[in-house]
Length: 122
Image (cartoon, rainbow, N blue to C red; front, top):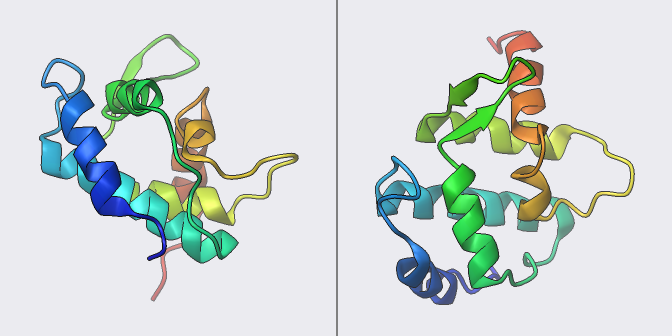
């Protein structure tokens, strides 16, 4: 991986707080690692750097999303193994696949529904 994940992880250690998420630090770190790896596989280049405040916002959103009915839906760390690849399979207009896009709006929710609708592999 071209992305300097160790440097990123050091920044993540600084901004991580237990009150932001129900995930332990290693799970949060793993979700970021999965995303940055998939980004690099998809685009052929490392993910652009993100600011500490952006990292903090993402961590705060990582364990849930609000759906159309104003319900908070919990997301387990293992579900990112499906959500992230589904995101990169999706064709968007004017999207650079930045992690900030993935954690904005209803992107994760929609990828979750896409995943549920796919037939299982044999």
